[in-house]
Image (tube, rainbow, N blue to C red):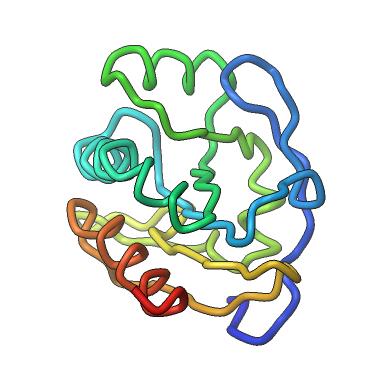
Length: 156
């Protein structure tokens, strides 16, 4: 897994409308890059709703929020429409970006092993260095943890 004080791996991924977002194209001071297991699952829905609810707080702190998981444009579009999500969600259909960040691997649920994305967030600074990694987070409190860290960075 990527760690703090390292340069964040570059990427270019599509959102629900097919628009490509790359790390280099983001102009904000901070990037909150959150990886989540799957569109439209209970925990991921709570997480995306919390990021949407606090989106203006992130913007006021100079941060762009991006969610990344598998699933294609249609999956992202349906997820956003169904839950009125305003956060930008990106499709990592082949899990290449998730693998580069070290968040894709073997998981276990109800005794079954499978490959999937861990719920991990990377906060990047203006040089796109990783300044914080949030692991083992609760979906409903995840956005607040990221905001709290950014608030401390900004002296608020």
